[in-house]
Length: 215
Image (cartoon, rainbow, N blue to C red; front, side):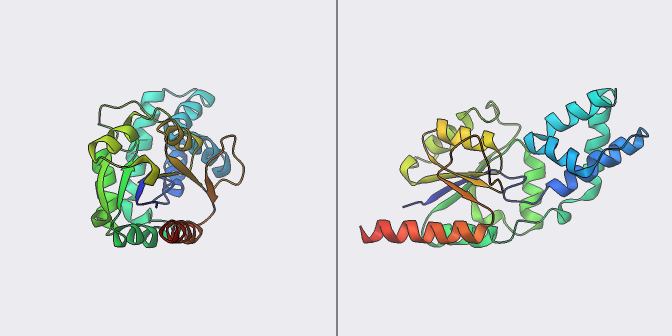
């Protein structure tokens, strides 16, 4: 059975990319610059830090100053405008109902993650999480995932890592657990499952767990 889900946060649990793109463009506008939303999105989907670094370099801006403007613009948007993706809560609830647990491994600061969870009434679905301040290298290093698995004595066979970027999938694979890639039809990595919506994930989990129970 799959009983333990290890989620990425931004772009997977929560639809944060529109806010990230808007914050980048507002920050650029403050310097009299602009860039197409689609281009900014493609950069930030690799990682937000990569997007900020590339934009600062392309427009000859001081990266630290640009990052500060981005951070302020992003905070001004607010967590209420970064909702969970449709179907996410159904998946989290299902895992809790079968006696499983949900976890998060994110590069997002702890306070930001806690606010996102609280604003959208999601806190109670999660047993534990590892955030930016915790002493682990960033994904695709599997250290944070391994730490959660060891901390809660999870059976790796019963774990599934869910993320929207290849680095999430590589981290899960290096940790020796199954993986699910959200929102990408084409990928250089080979996850166990690729989904475009979370209803698909819920049906897959129900079928997988029913088959295991029958066997």
